[in-house]
Amino acid sequence: MRQPQKSSMPRLIQAMVDAFRLPDLRWKLLFTLAMLVVFRFVAHIPVPGVDREALSNVFETNALLGMLDLFSGGAMRNLSIAAMGVYPYITASIIMQLLVPIIPRLQNLQKEGEIGRRKLNQYTHWLTVPLAMLQGYAQLVLFQRPEMGVLPPGTIGFGSDQLLTTAAMVLSMTAGTMFLVWIGERITENGIGNGVSIIIFGGIVAGLPTNFGRTYLEGTSAGEGIFNIVKLVILLLAIAFFIVYVTEGVRRIPVQYSRSLFRGGKMYRQSGGTHIPLRVNSAGMIPLIFAYALLMLPATVASYFLASKVSWVATGADWVDKLFNTNGYPYWAFLFFLVIGFTFFYTMVIFQQQNLAETLQRQGGFIPGIRPGRPTSDYLNRVIVRITCGGALFLALVAVAPILSRWLVGGTASSTLMLISAAGLLIVVGVVLDTMRQIEAQLLMRHYEGFIK
Image (cartoon, rainbow, N blue to C red):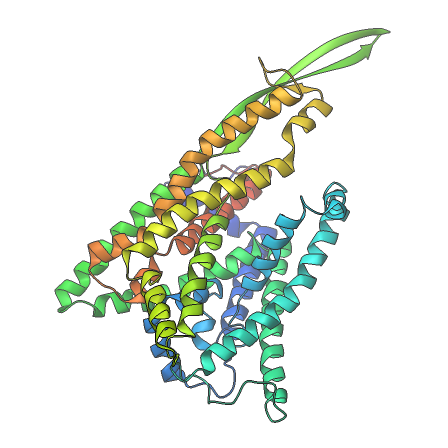
């Protein structure tokens, strides 16, 4: 294949032009865009009987629902059949990752290569269905509460006149979740990037114009509204740069391999070197999901007892609700330290599953100056703990980024807070980086010039 002619265009723009010149890569990009269009159509098919105005008011005042809406790709704000998004699938995936080191049968499947991974993926799909049904029913019950006013009272339940309606709604929402998972897997197989992440990414990006508009309206004048948006964009760019800088940080552990070759009846020893890349943030955004879920639970449970007729129960529920409210500083302090704790926990669980020391010894590799076996394992554990300190601090700072937006922009609306949510930014930056790497890999395979330095 001939080299493309040099152009005065920036390398990134030139790379996108080159990508669309290649028929198979152009097909992958167009297929990904088409699947995102289908997802956005599905996200606007509402569940019957929803009061749209009341639903809009609920999302304006409830940060918990705003966080869940983030993982639904914006579909929950419409209470559509895809209101749960791919969140049940993400939950099932996390549960499976935690069960693998505990259950020997799952450990054996993980060691069986591609066949084992397919079987684990099948188990994850099976687990997604009951989780989606439980979450769908819980969401409908939540929206049926009088203070929400989204669904008419008595719509959801197990009575003779409610069962059919409840089953239809829950099954339609479960089907919507599985349909989004199917779309995500098709994107992964036939498109560009990780399909599940791209679906969440598409929902976040689709909500940006609305969120910027709400930020503008928070200003008392047109000039102040524009100034708020400028400050918000600067803060977004600064946090995004911080995320990219740390996400791409890698500690390279040098590794030497030695092997024996027979040539002409004689044995020769050959050696070669490589490295093990240990990422500073190897846990990704999973610790954030754990921390958010744990902090949302007390406030959610307390909200059910706020109207209790028992005075001490109502008082306690009110105290818990205020303590774990996103408008209070205790919430952000708890979030900061929980993210650090979960980052260490999840990183060590995943690192132990990889069993790098045993793999190196089996393949004839060793770290210079470190004996194989247990000493190598101890050395790698010390290194991963040290670099995880930086990764944990990074995730904790990004997690409390919304409070920075409140100080700098001045708005307290949930839309402003959710716009700079840690999970949202990590998803956007992670998806963009992963997609860029895949596009560059496709171009380099066809002897085009890369664009990532």
